[in-house]
Image (cartoon, rainbow over the protein chains, first blue to last red):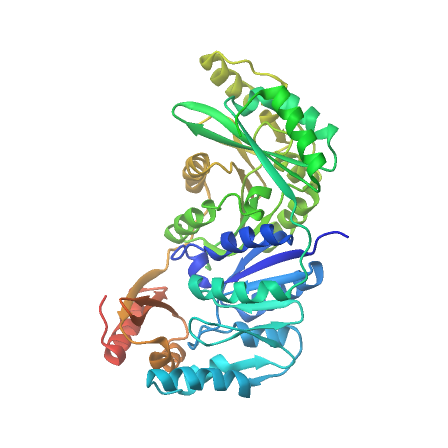
Length: 242
Length: 242
C-alpha cells in the first residue's frame, strides 16, 4: 500500500512579512520522513479567515493529512480555530475539557482565566484534542486537519504526541553519495542511471565548498535490494564518498 | 492604488523530505516588505511537473507576481523551466543569448559546455532573462512568473537584479512595542484598540524569555499619522518599550 500523504499549512502574517522565519515546516518534514508519511505540499497564508479556509479545504481533500501551525493564541489576530470550523461547516464553542485544561494551568500559575484566554478553549464540534504539554492550550484534529500552535516549542511537543496516533507508512530507505565534480559533469550519466531505476528516487543537490563544486546524490528506495543496486551503480559511475 | 501582490513557489523534493531548510522565502519576504509588494501566499511543491504547473498557474492568476526558486540546474531532476513552459502553453528551446552567457562562463573556466549544461539555456518562448552574476545560468520572467535558482546565493543575486524592474508599491510604515505581559493579559484591550484603527494592521507575537512571557506588538499603517496615533494609543494602554 502506498504511504499516506500530507500537506503543511503555515498560518501567520509574521511569516509573509519577513518578520519571522518559519521553522515548523522543516521540523515536520524531518519527522514525517522518518514516519513514512510523504509530505507533498506546503502552503503559507496570512491571518485571513478566507485564505485559511480555502487552503485547508483544498489540502484536506488532496492529501491524507493536513498539519497547520499558528493562530491559536488568545489575541484578536488568532483566528485559526474559527476559520477551520467555518471552512468545514461545523459549530465552534468553548469546550469543557479544553476549558478544564486551561483552568488547571492558570490556577497553578495564579493567573486569571479571563475572556481572552478562554478563547483558546474554543474547539470545533467533533474535533479531538491534541495535547500541549508546554503551555496547556490544546490543539485539535478535525477530521484529517491537525491544528497546532506556531510557537516552535509547542508545535514540536504537540506533533510528538500526535504522530503516534496517525496511520504511518513505511519510511523509504535512503542513502547518499558525495561526488566532488560539478553537476554539469555528472548530469548526463546520472540521468541514464535514474532511468535505469524507475522505482528509485535519485536527487542531485549541488554545493560549493573550498572553491570547488560538487553534489550530494540522494537515493531513496522502497527496499534494501533496490537501494543497494542503485548505490552500487552510482559508485561505479562516479566513485564518490558516502 | 493598492500595493502589488505576490506569491512564492518553492520547488524541490529536498525541502519536502526535510533534507534542506528553505531560506529563500524568508529573504524574499523581507525584500518585498521593503519594496512595498505584499507577499500573500507561499507554496512548496516537489520536483513534479504537474504540481509545479498547477501551482504556478493558480498563483499567477491570483497575484501580481509569482517568484519561484529551485529546479533550474543541469541534472535530470531540474524540470522547472520545462514545467513552467508547459503550464502556460509556450514552446521551450535553447535560446542563443542564454547559450552565449553559458559559453562565455565555461570558456573562461576551461570547462566543456556539454549537453547537460546546455539544458540551463532552455528558456520558454517570450520570456525575459534574469541575470545571474554568480554562476551565469540565467533565470527568466514569463509574464508575471519569475523563475530563479534555489541555491540561496544565486537566488539573492537574481532577486536583487529583478526587483528594480518590477512595479513596486508603497512600503507600509511599521513600528513595534515590546510589552512584558503575557498575551492573555493584553488580548482584551488589544482587540479593542485593533477595532479602533481599522486601516492599521496590529499583530501580537508572543515570546518567552528569562522565565517570563511577553509579546511584541507590531503595527503597520499606510501613513505616519495613523502609525503614530495607533502607537500612542498602545503605549497609553500598555506602557512597553520600543
